[in-house]
Image (cartoon, rainbow, N blue to C red):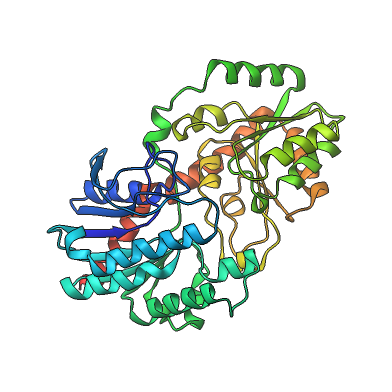
Length: 407
């Protein structure tokens, strides 16, 4: 089959996030399919921005559509969305340049790309799939406080409803999104769940972290003896204040808390730790994706937390949690959601979100276990990921959707 994947923010390990289109495309190509990813020349998620042209990265074919640069979530980002979608809807023949799709996937986080996806699918007689990352416009309403009457939200709502009324299938990273989609008009039998996952090759030949970073972490281990790690974004949604609160509670223990990454909350968190003299918390800059396995190997225990939010009633699918599980390290998961990959794997302890006392208690419980028992516990996560969350497994699930639609 010829698969057209539309994703405004599509990336790669070289470009930066987001990675799912790249990994899916590679697996589909291994299975004998042709794939074209159409993305925009600018994304706030990338570390390098491409030019408006064709580009092949590790055999994956991208076509970049020129859009404006922007900062934050203001007018500039909205303008970028509409520019990308308008060009695809009205100039798709020129953009596709002879590529004739059998399947068209709208996958841009926001639902506006369903309009050009439907038009392109109709023109070529292709199947049309909407891939749900986050539930828009529900996410900006429940996380950002937008009113349902806000003009931007109304536009997004029309696009989401258009998708559910016209799509051949919906593929969702959130297991319970069907409850929302069905309320908005999607027949339940058109819904398929394909979560996020890991790439086995990244773990077979990982890159080394810098000598200076390794030395610093080894010095922390020498001083404290036990390290709880967090790797990822430093945003409000990551609930890192509760992690630092737990560190403060355990300040008299030989347990260090190491945070690696960046984000809008990082400077405040660094300043908070300094102001409150929390001496068992250490911050590091983000590292390249291919160095993640080596970094996680230096930790004893890993943490991931969430805010309390009703949006999570539809489920979660963070890449970070699958990397954590693949590392073979036990996990403390502070969550209240429709699904819990840590509980499913049996590879750690899940506690109430934003509850520092519960987080601290879980850390103490795990830190008191023997190294052998920790290894056994973490190994359950690795086994779970290899069985359910490698991209080879996930891409095959997606292909089965294509095949079902083609019958």
